[in-house]
Amino acid sequence: MDVLRIDKYKVGLDRNRSCKTRMRRFSYCVAVVVSLAVLVACNDGGSSTPSIAAPLPDGQSAAAQLFTVKCGECHFRPQPVSHTAAEWINVVHRMDGHRTMKGKGPLTEEETKQILGYLERHAKAD
Image (tube, rainbow, N blue to C red):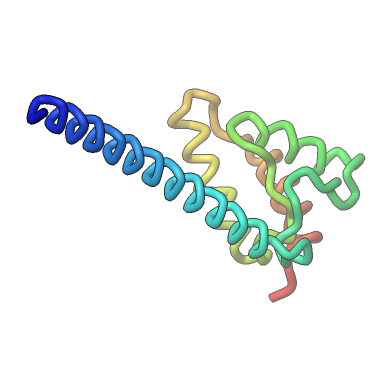
C-alpha cells in the first residue's frame, strides 16, 4: 500500500508540475495578447507622424526622386514633415556621414542642395 501511495503522490506531483507549466504558458500568452492590445490601442490612426509608405508631396519631381533613391539606399525614406527645415539640415549631413561610412560615397554638393531644398519646402512648420 505504501508503494501505491508513493506512486500516486508522484503522479500528483507530475500533475502539479504539468499544471504549473500550463499556467506559465497561459500567463505568457495573456501577457503577449495584452501587450499587442496596448500597442494597437496606442496607434489611434490619427498619428501626427505620417506613414513611411504614404506618397511624397510633389513625388514626381526630380528632387523627390533623388531623395527617395539616395535615402532609400540605407533605410525607408522618411516623410518630409518628419522634421522642421532646420532639423533636416542636421539630419541630411548626419546621414551623409553614414553613407560615407557604409562605402556608398557622400552626396555631391548639387545632390545635397536639391534634397535639402525639397525637404525644406515640405518640412514640418516650426
